[in-house]
Length: 231
Ligand SMILES: C[S@@+](CC[C@H](N)C(=O)[O-])C[C@H]1O[C@@H](n2cnc3c(N)ncnc32)[C@H](O)[C@@H]1O
Image (cartoon, rainbow, N blue to C red; front, side, top):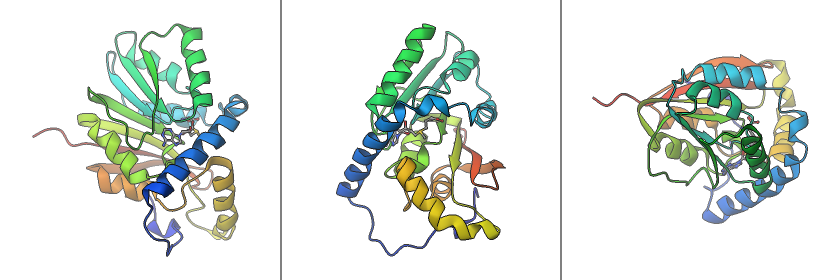
C-alpha cells in the first residue's frame, strides 16, 4: 500500500474516453513544451530525492533501464554512471521541447547508450524487456496512470523493480484544507491528472509496492514496486 486512498477526491465523472486521453496528451505536450525552456532553473530541486530513488533500483553495470516521462534527462547522468557504457537507457517523453533538451544533454556527454524516444508512455511498446524502470515526477501527469503502470510492468523482466518519485495533495493533517488549491495548481502547472491515483494504480498492477520515503509533509513520495521472479 503506497498511500492513503482517502487522499483522493471522490468524483462522479464518467470513465475517461479515448477523446479524454487524446485531449490530456495534447495539453501535456503544450504544457511541457512551454516549461521545457525554464525547467533547468528548478531541475536540481528534487535531485537528492531522485538519487535516493535510483539507489533503490540497485542498478548493475550492463543493465537495460527504461525511464518514462524523462523530461530533459535529469536522471541520465546518474543512471548512466550505474549501468556503465555496456548498459542501455531508453527514455520516453511526449514533449518535443523536453526531448530536444534531453538530446542536447546526451550529445554534450557523448553517451552512445542513452536513447530517447518520443511516445505516449501509456501505450508504448518495446522489442526487448528491461532490467529496471524509473518514473520521476511523471506518472501523475499521464493521461491514464494505470495503463502507464501496466505498460512499464509488461516491459520489465521478472524480478525487476520500478522506482517512482511523485507528488500529491497533502495526505493528512490540517494542511489538507489547502488541497483544492493544490489540485488546481498542479493541474495548471503540470497538467496533473486528477482522476487517477498513482499509488492505487501501482498497487493494482505490480506484485509488490512499497512507500519507502515521504517529503514535504507527505506531498512528495518515493515508491518502489516489483515484479515477482519467474517461478
Ligand atoms: C514534471 S516533468 C518530469 C521530468 C523528469 N522526469 C524529472 O524528474 O524532472 C513530467 C514529464 O512527463 C512527460 N509526460 C507527460 N505525459 C507523458 C506521456 N503520456 N508519455 C510520455 N511522457 C509524458 C512530460 O512531457 C514531462 O517531460
